[in-house]
Amino acid sequence: MYIPKHFLIKDKEILYDVIEQYSFATVITTHKDEPCATHLPLIFDREQQTLNGHFAKGNPQWNDIEGQSVLTTFHGPHCYISPSWYETDQTVPTWNYIAVHVYGQLEIVNDNEEIYNRFTELVKKYEKDGSGYSMENVDTNYVEGLTRGVVAFKIHINRIEGQAKLSQNHSKERKELVIKKLLESKEEMNCKIAHYMTRAMNNEW
Image (cartoon, rainbow, N blue to C red; front, side, top):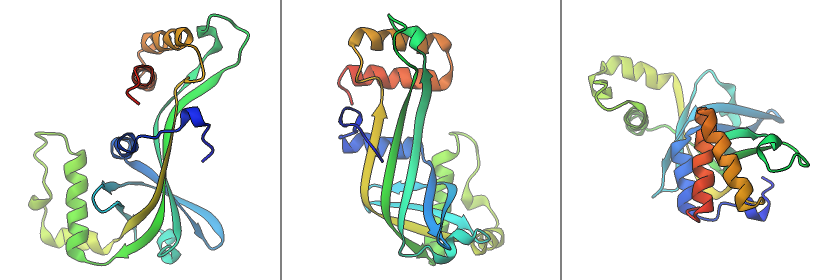
């Protein structure tokens, strides 16, 4: 990923937080000499430095994926920045965003107990408190059938890089104008970018 130096995310913990918070990722590989991508929820294991997930067995991407160098992208919030928000109109529009790229080698997981544990982790991560749903309550025969229908994997991470383009190349006054307009819109993405812009201005990033 091309990252101008003032947009580079240097803090490892920030990279990890983006991966965990925006965990519906894109897994990109080569399949039959062509680029191939699948969109998947992934679990990040900080201690083991792996990304864990599963393909549907009918997805051909997994057939020749083991051992490949894999790129996984995590897309954080993003939004349009209008020049009309600035103190002058002698400038151009831009886009603010946060993105993290993870590089590594993929290993197919065949252990059924580990696959089940990954299912359980996904449920615990995404189910809301008090939902009442638990993998432990699902019929074991159903779970076994589900397991046969997927190909589980782990990506052993070699490198992580991230970019937070949050108007760092503009003046403090201009950033404050942008944050004000983003918050006024009340749109979720805009408000999130405003939040991260504020953190960056306060040197929390």
